[in-house]
Amino acid sequence: MAWNNNDGLYVKFHKEIGVAGRGGYVVAGDESLHTVELRITATGLGTASAIMDDHVVIPAGAVIEEIEVISETACTSSGSAALNIGLVRQDRTTTYDEDGLVAALALTALNVAGEKNVLRVGSTGAGTLVGTTLANSGVIVADYDTAAYTAGVLVVRINYSRA
Image (cartoon, rainbow, N blue to C red; front, top):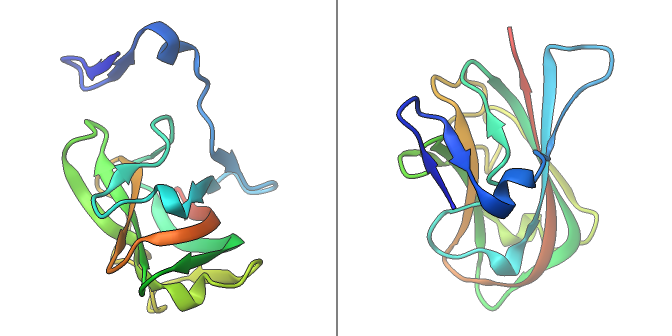
């Protein structure tokens, strides 16, 4: 059971309270560079954005430098699935930008195991938040466009800096 309290903090009770945060680390040697890493099972995605890890928040003031999308297991689809990754605000209900990190990344970029896509400003599939400073903190969400995935596991790294 969880909700946002009057201070805007996400409060958890019962079993959820004991789950440690996961997904983020500081790049060795440079405390201004941060990486959030998560694993996404493509078949678990839907047409509506869903929170990928409730414990990982990208903070306001983060400058999104690049996104790495690695196909741990090749993605397949009965159609032309396209990947979207973005953010919702910390209240977990207000949309920030649901494809602001990765926007309609084509199946052909994910259909070979070991394939790595590095998305920077201007890259095909880079969302509008890449290269910008976040005005609000956000929780990571993902979905697909066009067709469902029938297989695939992705490792996604969101690299950001803090001034």
